[in-house]
Length: 296
Image 1 (tube, rainbow, N blue to C red):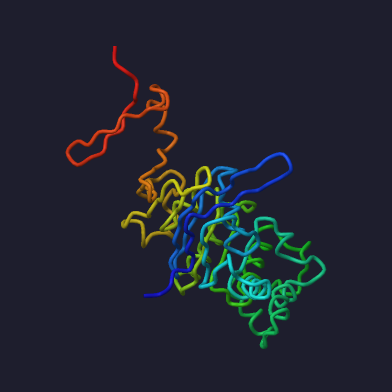
Image 2: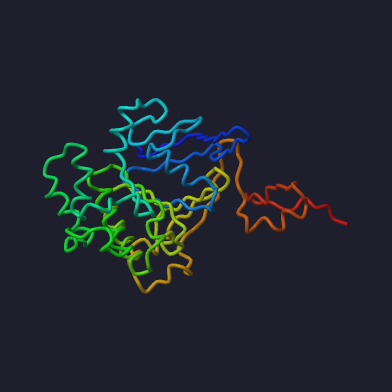
């Protein structure tokens, strides 16, 4: 059995200042298998970007366990961490300024990670990647000559330059139009079909509803998972489906090791009528939650 690509166990992240402490992650558990295409969703401040940065070795956890690509990110040395960030993970950021150097051509930008790693066949590999993302005709262009969507496609080529085992994408369709977003998703789907493990952080409803597994983070913990219905698995590239409104996924609330769950916010209204007390009953094999409000 292949080793999981991401194994997070009771992961905690605390940010401290002189006056305050912020608990960004509070006991997060998640496994992403090798070869999965997974999306992370959550409101601003939920902890998803913090988690992505820790997976990529850009931030250190405070407690728990985090193993990515077989590397224990709690015990990894600084030298190993440099190699990990260069060879194991590739990043695609929403802000293209983090992906591209404006004084280099498109081709030079894609070749740069390979130069830094000492790879051979740099030009041939870069041309192959630009062909894959549909940008070979712009190989001599500079950043200011490209649209936002074109820049993002080049950014994907850069992220793949050193053949990373894990591709991390932070809001990859956040600043592009719908047509370009569809192109980027189709590209991710093709990469995943060929074995690439991909983790996407997104607010894009249409994109998240096309992903086979969507993990929701709330208040620093995994609250639920949405799995693509079998009837849609082979239809993720169909443009005739309205991915923003169609019910394409089944949602499951996640129970942690202590038996705790997070009730979806849209279901909490009536339960709050009884304050912070909720009545729990077992009826015909089903767990029933009801308001703790007393009758009469």
